[in-house]
Image 1 (cartoon, rainbow, N blue to C red):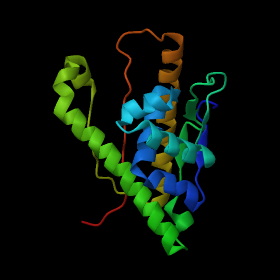
Image 2: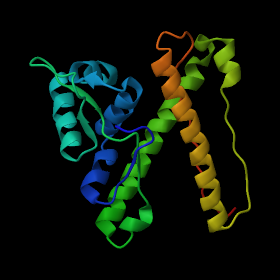
Image 3: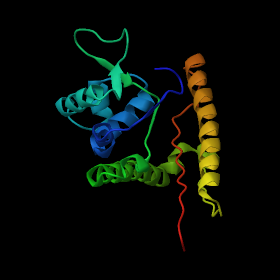
Image 4: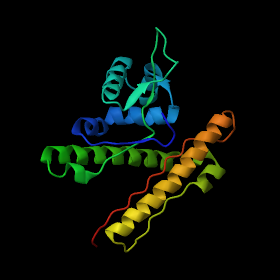
Length: 195
């Protein structure tokens, strides 16, 4: 998987993968682990090995994950994400009510996962120590923008996140035993609203 590779989802079958809670959790777990076996993923998502194996095969069928080269043997297959990121635009599914429903369900499932991670952090932040508690942040801003300005802001923030993702990836590869390197979840939502 090339660093920074992103896949644009354009069909409903692929989008359904993100609307399924376990498949979404498996994709997040594979992001964190980089490569993992079905048994390791079953442990991480707290589900049965047979159920996880089934859903991994479904994700692979749609090209969202793939076998990790050189890692599998006769006993176990190793998996990795086929792309570092996935994206889709709701407008691509607007003409088909069923597809739009799947897109909405996928967005809701991703948001639910993000919120559950944030709630867990709020409950457990004290256990991480002062450095992590002080480094973490939450922010919201009320901006007055046009749609093109919001698109420009999105592109700039995405570029910043890609820079830091690459820095973290290289740091983890160059110094795998470096103390203090953890997975960090960052999510920002920006959308228009009328008060």
